[in-house]
Image 1 (cartoon, one colour):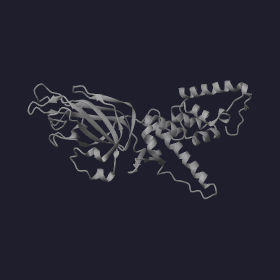
Image 2: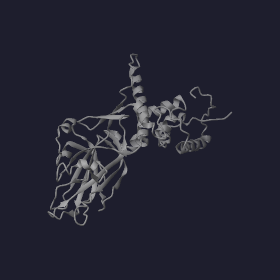
Image 3: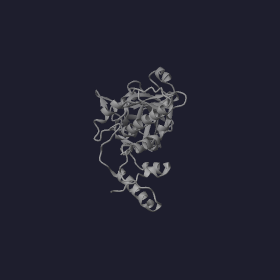
Image 4: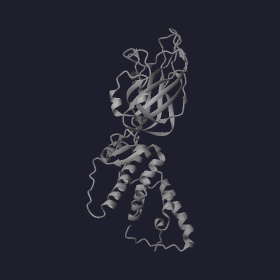
Length: 365
């Protein structure tokens, strides 16, 4: 008879967690939970799906709790109702974080910009409005399409552009900017900034944001809490879409992105002032709505994550590896092979330790 050893029964909890933590996809953790009732209880009780999400996206630490608005919560009235509710909460986190990780990594990346929210200055409003930067075309109806700052004698004066994303929760990977080239001016000058930095965040108060009037100018960022600031990137003085890849994917909760354009290099012949002009902006990432949504608490910055499984299945249907919220039937891959190697190593080490081995007739299987 083939002899098998269930290492979860004999290892300390921390050691078992460290082994399963080597898996780098929640789909693998979900498959691990299908091995037996014992494995399922272990994966859920230790919150391994949640830990994997937090390891890859630290911004998720601000989640106060998760909820499934369309999921009916069972009401328990027996003596063990408290324990039952606690286990229900752990199972919900297992489902939500397991699906969240798949959405964060597998949803198709697109341009996430929804609308232009405001600029620190605009030279000729609305002809040279920030709204023009949403359209990739350089000219619309025989008119050049771009945003222009006001002119400055001091070339070090920065400018900021603020945008609203398609969803209040997005994973952003890169941002593209195309400086404007004035083909109608002598020498075809390009009004690029020297460098750029990006910020992401959420409004301090939804009420304050809704009351702001257009055109929004210098004090827009006083109404927004920036939770992420990127490194500074150098810009080239060329009229092409320049791509700035973030050091790692950033979870933007709140749906606002700011471009801080620093340093001016080009003066206008007419007034000898320095200007910054932008033709087009793209923010590339994965918007998680409608599968996931957030409610942000005004005081602490914590947020409630809301999960809609049906919407996620519809969203993922266009992806080559569709998500399954409870069971993923993909073939075993390298992560599973790595886990098997670790288990084999532990079994080999413990052969001389008189561990009790069991013969595959566990009722849990």
